[in-house]
Image: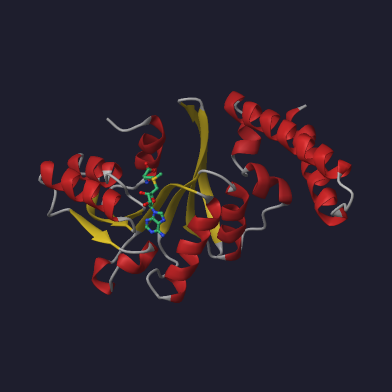
Amino acid sequence: NLSKRLQIVADYVEKGARLADIGSDHAYLPCYLAQNKQIDCAVAGEVVEGPFLNAVNEVSSLNLEETVSVRLGDGLQVLNDFDNITTITIAGVGGPLIVRILEEGKQLRKRTGQETLILQPNVNEQTVREYLMRESYAITAETILEENGKRYEIIKAKPADEKTAYNEKDLLFGPFLRQEKSSVFIAKWESEAEKTAYVIGQMEKAEQKDEEKLKELNKKLNLIEVMIK
Ligand code: SAM
């Protein structure tokens, strides 16, 4: 059984996908999808040897070698032209790393820009949404959930014909999540408001004030307060 978090990522993968799961660790996600005949095939990419071996073992113990190919390497570098990947999943890493992997993959022509992206940043979701907008992707679904005392956001995006103009609230909170305003969402932003107010307080005490950063944080705090009130 998948975790609640990975189950939602799995549910976002469309039937018949040719999947690249980057930072796959145990390859639980591609193995689950392969076992349930949801995907055509998958590449499970890992840059660290331990998790790579976890993935190799998982795939072989389930006899899924024909469907799930486990590869050692950085980001999308593990892909080749014959993979014809249609969906890329990257879950459980920070937003800036997701952006780096996608950007390097584009430079190296490891992705075409036509792939469906399903991303679960652990932190800094805003960076991911900003990148998606720059890359002319449209967010088609989002989920926020809580599991084992942690909150996660999952973002699904598809290439769009025209650039979607997300505003600053969409980018910070998520275009769907901010409309839905679930209880998990409110809890997340209540705690973000507290953290932000604390950082502002500390910065205001400092002798040398970073006015630029303070302004930015105050603006963010204001957006959050309006959102959750
Ligand atoms: N995706 C799984 C999940 O969501 O449960 C595993 C997440 S685990 C916390 C993050 C994994 O990403 C680690 O196994 C790490 O080795 C891998 N990773 C980090 N940077 C990577 C990169 N540049 N390329 C491939 N894998 C990477």
